[in-house]
Length: 459
Image: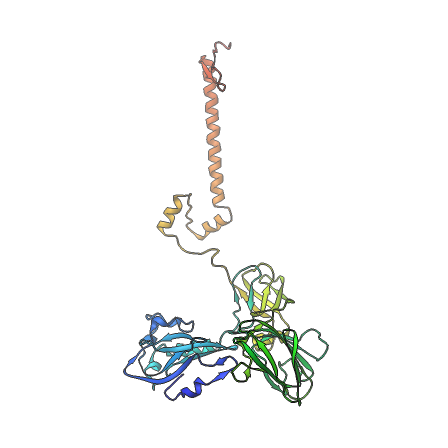
């Protein structure tokens, strides 16, 4: 919250692996004795959409007397709302695996009457929830083999495989997407279930430079790391050896294959990879420059569907991160997926004590329960016969075939009786005509009619 004491020089210079942290550049403070208000028609951000309805929210009626004038960074910022004078009110951006939201006024009485509005607490709650959000949505839409992304990233990263030991490559203990190679694990393991010593990490990705020219590639490492660019080893760095620098020429926008293998034996653990762009300064290669490498070897796990039947679930690494997919058709209800504890903990950030739960929603497009209007009934009656059930028992009878089917049987029975009576009447008429000796005119196709005379039983 950019209050009156916020130092623009400090916050505007706050950079990191993904560039400037703030989505705006802070400028001078603005003041107004009359005050300005947030413009409700500008609440289009997902964290503020609830406040756009002025009948339900009084946020647009807040009066702000002091605010921070700012300019949106067009390369990374998104406006969440503006004041009614056009100045930004809230701006947001994704940063690495996180999110950043900036309000251009203090959230206390120094700026105005915002804390006294009924919408103040929901505003704080929604902004905090959005900033901390971006997690996995465990509610899936019905589909054949429904899937969900397990990594909530706002930018790129590297595909990472963590192994229990150095040298010989066996099955990885942990697979994930790392936003950058920027780790200082010290004497702690990378993950709780990883060992403290004697492990290795493989990072693979596509590198997308934004500027053409010569780059300097460097690594800060303990114990050692080897880096390949375009399948050629360009840098090998070990602890206690002089720093190495690799000069690599990149073309803006041209993808280049990248691979790094890090090995840790004992002691402290550090793995950081830097570059110095042409005319720039040394910094961690940001996540925005990485595209994770796809992994064509999905791992299969056991799952249980809502009916208690065994199912299969696969976890694969793609360019958007880890994807969990349920095999086969979806059944609405609760699924339980049995993942390895270390994988589940990397997803939920909590120890795995039970199968991972996820839900497939009902498809509301398949049917709806609503009362038909008179116009609906009139339109329906113009095309077919309509039966209006009067009770739940009538509905159940129709659905089970005991109601509507019974009506069809009754109609068919009545029709059969009528046909039988008609046939009997016709037979009696023919018999009576024969006894009376009437002429019977019979035609056979296009030939001349034949007239037969019946008299006393002779023809």
